Image (cartoon, rainbow, N blue to C red; front, side, top):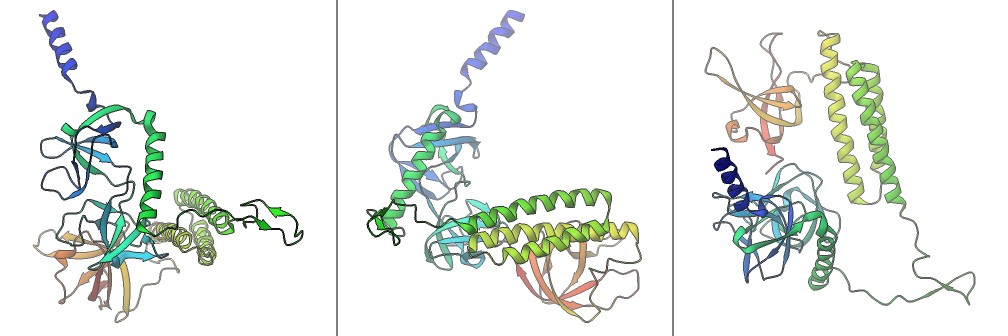
Length: 380
């Protein structure tokens, strides 16, 4: 009986596909193979490739686990709404909102192939119907049917080869699209101090001061983050306020960077930490002195019109069938929401900006309520 069991286990292990160990480098083993935006034949075809093309394979998916989840090293095009993309140059953009869908065609009716994070850099190649045509980021997965892929070996073994394919393919794409000029012969420059002397190519370039400044700010930001974690554990309000003041100074310095991409990325990371520090101050202040809020966070008076950003959530009240809608940031309820203008159930779990008027509280025990007059979804 034991011998039979061992034979069965050996038989099962021998029939297991070597492709079940992920990730690995693969090669297309067929002509005119479709690369799709999802694991199924109902998904849009992003490109059609021929035998010999290399890909990175990260897993199985689809209804019957028949599709490989891959990364293709050559440029593929997709579309993203212009609404949340800030152009930092003619053909470069950066995403300014969380969870924005990347779609295979310029239409919201098409199922997205990926959801991108704020700060994602994008290579813009065109514009159509309110969408930018962009090169799919390297982090985005595409799908190929497993019958058309042959395993080459471990991904680490082919990493340099795939990196070179990606680099050369992007160079070829840039030249073909006409967005980047082809390389021109380098003309030697004369030294202005010594007319008879030729300056070697590249030695007359000025150092990239902006890149050094950005790196310096990111190092300081990491140091502030560690200080914040320490002061938060101690529940030290003066220490947290000092971190907040240093972050505000860092934000002012970041705004003076000349490179738009660097300016945006540093400011975004600073603002994320500022939000965490503010929430920590609120939480610590409630513990230390429940009756008095920190002076840095005064509540607007009833009747005030304010603009506030956060996540719209739903809360079911016990003993009643009443549903309450609230605006949260972190684990803090900023406001409960009231409105006749919008069906708030449509915006549950969305990151939104709301504008409205603070309502008069019925009693001192009530939470602040915001009557929404304008609502803007920040994630799509």
